[in-house]
Length: 399
Ligand SMILES: Cc1cc2nc3c(=O)[nH]c(=O)nc-3n(C[C@H](O)[C@H](O)[C@H](O)COP(=O)(O)OP(=O)(O)OC[C@H]3O[C@@H](n4cnc5c(N)ncnc54)[C@H](O)[C@@H]3O)c2cc1C
Image 1 (tube, rainbow, N blue to C red):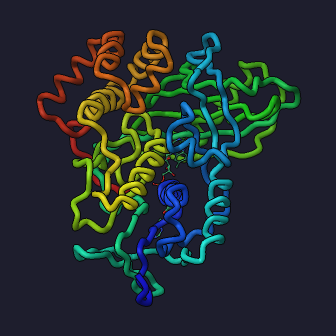
Image 2 (tube, rainbow, N blue to C red):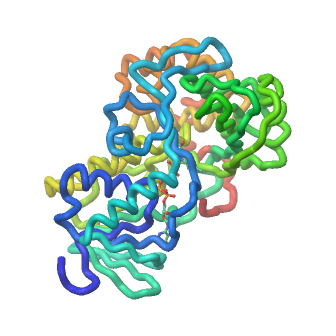
């Protein structure tokens, strides 16, 4: 497109989804061939989040972000038991600041990309193209990729929160094994939800220690501080200082999950990232799904094929719905359910299952080894048609 204020693509927001879209377009040698306008009001200069995911090093999240992966852990400590290898998987870590810097370098390299530090106030589409309203005027494009938070409120009864308070700590003596991470250590008090700890060491004296809750009530710093302190003391890591803290929350909901695998041809405003339903409802993990979706979108743009959504196959939606209901209604069961899953199923199979890449046979095996009574209760609930997580409806709010 070459009319003034008209572009091939407009990216609304410069976050995980649209950045991975830029990386995908670059990998497919499309970046120089299309005009792109980025509308993002934020300067994207701070390290506002840490992104971690497990990877077999073949998935788009790893391939697209490899140059900025700042740490990888080939071994895991689960449930406080023995350390084990995750091969062929690793757990990896990205600092968002470095991802933003890499995206900015890519933008600076391409004259075809313009970044306006403006917020979008409204988006519309007319079947042939789409329009974005901003305080600086209206812009048009063949497609608009929208990664803003959801614009319509979601009922509180349909959301469970993954909330977390993380401390990046530095100890005085070397205490950490840098190739070993701790995922989901449930040996912490269980109240107001299912609660666990992550420990992600990045040097012998530095680690991110993160207290996490799956629950309706969002974790506060005041609640978390004594638990983090006690956990760290219990590990005998000695004196430490806090270098950074991360306090945030991720919505765990099925309400945003797309109903179709592809968008209709006339749809020109394409939701991306969290608001498109890329966050896995039962875990809050999203980065891999986001990167995989953006990669498939870029491939479809290149091939001029229908654009995909971050669709979750129906049976994974069903598992998520059952687990989410259990975590919501019977949070005391979260710890035994996850512990059982990690104790009785090889970690590689658990990763495939959570990535929605497992076979039906693997899924059945995992289910079989789970405490079956609560799942039967949850399945009965689902079959009775209670779609929301809670029976009583609560006030609506946006996340
Ligand atoms: C602190 C934190 C840590 C996380 N860690 C992990 C993790 O370890 N692993 C994992 O798998 N997932 C993680 N997630 C979940 C998920 O991966 C992230 O939320 C991810 O950033 C979502 O990507 P996104 O593109 O949808 O949104 P974002 O990355 O949040 O990007 C949205 C962008 O839209 C911009 N925007 C907002 N309003 C407007 C507007 N009106 N006009 C234009 N732009 C606008 C924002 O400024 C922002 O830059 C984490 C989430 C959080 C909050």
